[in-house]
Amino acid sequence: ERGLGRERPGGFAQPLGSAWAMASSAEEVEGEDSSSEEPDVRWLPTFPLSEDSAAAPDEMVMPVFFLGESVYLPGARPDLNIFEPRYCEMYNNIIMNGSRRFVVPLLGTAPAPPDSSAAAQDKRDSLQIAEYGAVFYVEEFKKIDEETGGRIKYLCEHRVIGAARIKRILNPRNLKDRSTYVRAVVEDVNMDLDEGENVKGAELQLTRTFERVVQLHSKIDDAEAVRFSREVLIADNLGTRGVDGTFWHTANLWQALVQERLLLLQQERAKGEAAIVRQFLTETGEWRPQLRLMDLPENLQVKFRQLQEDFREEAAPLRDLLTRFFQTLIQEGRHEKRLEMMQEIMDQEAMRLQAKSSLQDLFDS
Image (tube, rainbow, N blue to C red; front, side, top):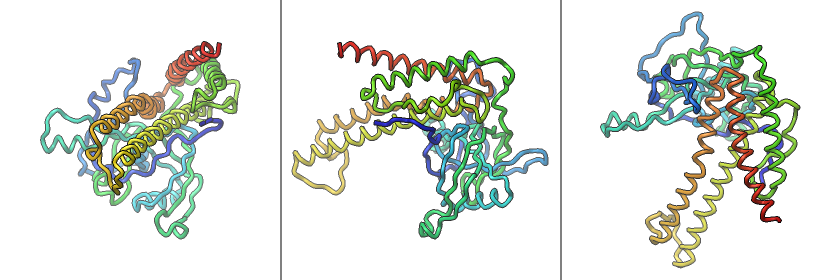
């Protein structure tokens, strides 16, 4: 059972140390259709990795911290263990100068090109950097290198205080050599472009739907392994605007729910794989310190591959939510649109749970 009764951090990734190249998205950023039903992540366009540049006096510069395929939402409170020299340098600098801020963009894998040349292989292995990222603020900064034998230098507590748009990377060559941290020209994102508009009705509709989801989770109980507890209902309006509003609290809760469901799937897959290995060892009576898929008989290979395929199929929509959906949520500047996006996700969950509840009632009767 996984009952989610309090706010959870927006992600659980460790610092990434291998980002060295990047590519643009398949579609031009400026050509995106903002009216599409499923908005796309906006990626930075391709640029050379060897040409550094300087910021203008009136431009805002912020360090960039890469945390992989994780999206962090306003209000999240992530803890990070800092051990890479470039990031230790970054923390020293932002603590000393008092800024205490850096931007964390989503990373993605560039689409594989149709040809198979050496240059194409480089692109296939490259990464994409999202144009919008979460702004982390360092709240607690603790040196722990003596306690960890030098493995980890700092333990830092953060609060996500908003989002920033990356306009350009100033030192792209350091994406490759990692001799120092990356810096970028950024601009703070106004996350309430429609401030002043009356969206109270949409906020309350979102609240009612969320309450309905919590009620259904409680009703079907053990039939839903990962579910909300009633303690998440902290206010009469769970959709209020602003970085400190209840909307982002609700979004963080929803993100945690999806993360827990994906974790459960991963655990179930691991149990299934272990069961296949045990079956092989029991039937053959052999013990091998290392076992490859090709060492298994054909029937167990088929079973193993089917297990992996089932996992990929079930995990795909959860991973899409954790990357594309939550990333497009933070790059959306209108509160009304974000409410609409969350409402659609909650409606789908409520419909799924209602169908499950109806089947449960049918069998109980």
